[in-house]
Length: 319
Image (cartoon, rainbow, N blue to C red):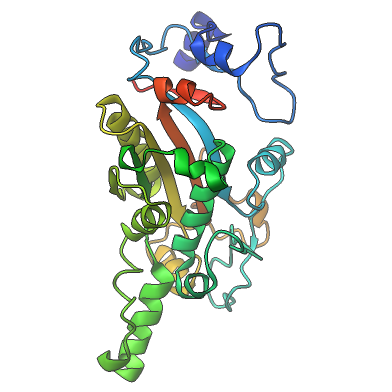
């Protein structure tokens, strides 16, 4: 009842025109339809609850690019269209034999290729958690009109990377432990620790791009990406960076990952109906559903974005 009263007393409205909207659209252009299947640019907010907008364009943070790796592929608009259509990417796990697990389904990525984004040697060597991050990060830069040769225009000392992960390079870790048990420490790969720790996704992406601004990782379980976006925006607001690549990456659908969540009774066991198993607010809920992938945003100060005539998608507010 309180929620209904709140919604009735605080009608939703489109945010008033400001430099972001007038910058990204011609004056005589019609605003994008809210029901179109292309990317949305209108910002909807609750009047009573909306935070105050910063006046200093150096402290206002905008989103200029998006990149992802998902069960629906690596294209943001395709991913969004499938969500609007109500399609589910959840299915039975076939990466390994899960027949003896009480949960046998998840959001498993299939057919992922990093061609053109990661060189062959590293593509074979890196954990999927790291591969997803690098591809999503570079695709986000492309979306922000900073792909290819345009990257040379970036002041790399003022650009940072903050991509978090809950589990890190779990496959590399699992394989390393197995190798240690079966073959001894002398056969342990030197990449065991570097590619397993949670900070390596951010580190490798920053090294690849040459970014020398703030660079670290946050791990706060299912809230990781929110913390990363918040921290990245703070770096921009405090004047420590003009641009941040921020987001999250995860690749834990392997035996030890599935087994670990099963052991703490966290997963749904609706193996006969995996596509509707994720129902967090339902009275018949029985656990969550594992997934994997990466989602990354390019965040900039409004001043920086407008100077380079960037495609501004949204403004990031903090309460």
